[in-house]
Image (tube, rainbow, N blue to C red):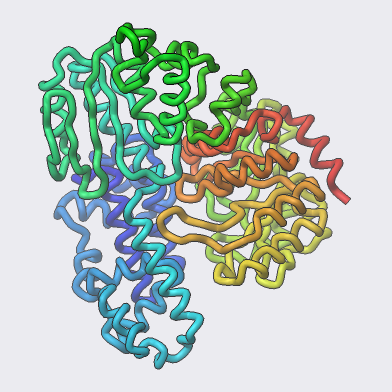
Length: 574
């Protein structure tokens, strides 16, 4: 029987194939939703009965049956049938940003395009332009999408790399051969995309540990295996390197292999000015090779005359100077977060009822949360109209009156429509505690038009926060272009919050925008866009981006107590 991840991948494959056949979007969404739920489910479903499977949110009787077929037959017959009717590379074409399933299907039916090479050839010889609805601008967007796709394949999203690294370090740790195992490199710095995975271990059984690492189940190719280092390819996806060091050199090795390269160069320059030499083996006096520091990162930074620099900001972007002057920011931490600002209930496309969410959020230690179900134009996600929102608000008020552990804010994620207007009446939005404005359609609009849409939403006075500012999906689509500087200027003028969406596929806004917002006094909310309670685990990624963006608790509104947040929201409403 496949594990949860493999089952989810097969369900997503079915959804991909159904999209190419222009199937009912609600049927497609059902498979996607079940896949998301299985990925988030804390237990293996290997031994679940079909009845037990249907108790998992989003897994209905039909899909539970498909999982049952996978258990008994080793395959899902529907998936096998779909594979026969759709050429495999069409799925790859669908991953090109701006090239949705309808266009891919059209190109295949009319021109027999079933590969990247055939698509590129049809663009080169002008054949693609002969199809109905395909204009020069369309072709230009497809070319840009191909370039983005080919570039993005060189790196993988942080979320994927983090899970892989976590699994590898756990397996190495469980072997009993290592005293300590940690992830270093760009994952430790919480970069949004990762080139390779760096793992550091302390062990006296160096060669034995390297051999174990190169034989882990996820290893698809062994690239190198020496006495202290093993390099492998994981799941035919990404390279992973493990280095085994001594306890005495662990701190210097961790600093070196965490990087960044530019940060390390600056540290070596400072060391030389002090008559010292810094390497992965330690900090030494140049004149006699005496070890000055090596066991911990903290003592290395101290000997270089600076405060300890958190890994997330080691990018040579001012952190070295700040550490020398004692002016490093007190970066936001997960423990500081008081509430969740963006979540969906079963009123739209979430998995839980309002009562369930209140209980689960209190169990997780949250003091408040904002219910932000979708608005009516997003029908596929069960978007709510004005009457439904006001009815939901009444229910929220009743829940608040009977339980005091966590405060619920009534709200909505209202669509910013293509013409810049909002999807709901202002009179209804003013009745709510919190309004997030987001773009979900018209993603191919020009930079100027997309910017104007967001500016128009902020000027209404009823939008408290802009959600996932660029609409990007890391490694899948670049999102729409916006003039970030103009938006930050307007956010500062109108006291509008910018969301840092913590979903690992979004991480939107990014760290650069966080620093710009901080410099302009614009407040940020770190939100998970929760649909299932386990999505709250993604808060970790949002915190990582916020720390990379030098954000402190004063910059992040959901580190505030509920009363302070309420006062802030009331002060900015017309």
